[in-house]
Image (cartoon, rainbow, N blue to C red; front, top):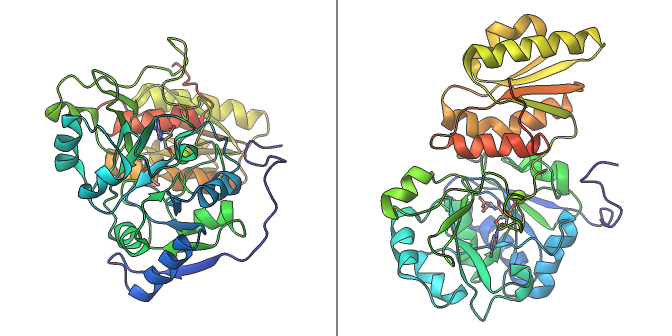
Length: 360
Ligand code: TXA
Ligand code: MG
């Protein structure tokens, strides 16, 4: 049994409507139709600049409960509340620290989630029973138009089955959730490709719980004392980000990620690919486009991610899904360092590989 195929998940029960919209949110009638589903307590998957979210009215506990059921997600993992405008933050939070204002002014709309004290209108279910709430204003015009039209804050985790690879296109959402949700708003591929940075403002100094689309360097330019993510959520006792499981974002196929770049990484991949072939296995790899030529002779399927960390981030999850569907026995990749956006990419690769990087 795979991690995303658990017996407590209900079987598909009804048709999922697919509505296609432009990046500007046209036609408005489709946004309005999806918003009406949200207002009625239904589930709508929608594009954001990071990944697709699975949305429900954050003020309606029955609707929020449907998110957990559709994903097969445990209630111990809190949801991010999405709002259309930074000015709406006081509607979902209380006792806001002064830092929230400065960060919102600099990074919203954008891929930054602020963990702040939870407001009275947000049910405990959204926050895994806790007293805080994660909030963000997505940069996607489609997402903001949907939230505005719904007229309510929208709770939304990534629109994948629990522990599986996050979706960066409507087709990925349907592959995981067709028949389990009411609607998918298809606004094209996500531009950033990894999830938002989650920053906890309820402790001092503020700490990054999950690296993501806003870099640590950019956060420190506004708040110099921001602490980076703990090296592993299991070090130091209690996990500080409840959803940060060491195995997460995972393809079904075995994934080996070498913790190196350049020729040491490519040499390790070559040796492993050769050994796998000798054992009769088919081998796939996720590589920067410029690296593909060096290993073409020892790989069965190559998924080029582009050049530069922004391209690699944008194509990472789609590449994992493509290789997962390609029928290979093992997928090989390597880390891309820890500067800027690479911190998030390396974090996702490690978790997708079961929480472990392979030393070279
Ligand atoms: O980019 C994103 O953040 C996407 C899009 C859809 O907005 N959403 C997303 O949601 O990645 P999800 O549920 O897959 O991941 C949310 C992460 C989890 O690790 C969760 O534990 C953490 O944020 N989180 C949410 N609320 C929190 C809270 N109150 N305290 C601590 N961590 C929180
Ligand atoms: Mg997720």
